[in-house]
Image 1 (cartoon, rainbow over the protein chains, first blue to last red):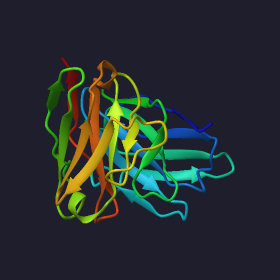
Image 2 (image 1 turned 45 degrees about the vertical axis):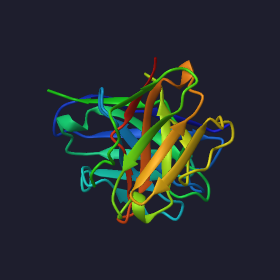
Image 3 (image 1 turned 90 degrees about the horizontal axis):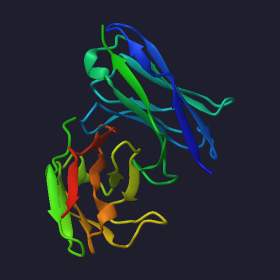
Image 4 (image 1 turned 90 degrees about the vertical axis):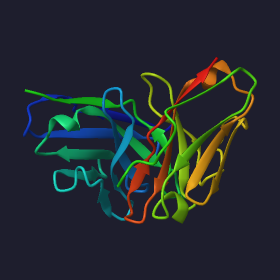
Length: 119
Length: 110
């Protein structure tokens, strides 16, 4: 059974850093593309980043240069390193698996972890 | 990358059909077949309902169907049921190798 479990969220001051983790089971993060999507309180979904099986990474303009997506194949875990955090980064962050052989389609999602950026 | 445009809300009575539109540009919706639709109930994670414009994942009811014309994709829910009340988001691949979501549509079953 495919499962994704996010962790690492919490309250952080503006300008601070946080690393989110997403533990995957039932598939390998190295063999699939995996993405981060966020949702600000009461708002819509916003795509954040993706890492492909070959290692290529892409980011939304809103986080480019501040966030870094990575994975640890030995731990089957996805990460999102978030630096220079701003109030507008406050959101629930979801990790999601890309559907095999289908472009830009996220077929399994975690339950999300809340990041609150506030002083 | 600007969000795709969806109506804020759509409503219908049980048994009726409703259609949600998703308008983008030639750099996203109009340029690729990679349009997906997600359903999200309050406090829950999104669920994939349609991919590649019109394909349904295993387990998704055939009451859900998708289509595309030019820069606008559409999701139709036929035989509307109470359990269909949720937020719906479209998504597309883009020419900059990124993804973009729609603004979201709240579906209300009257």
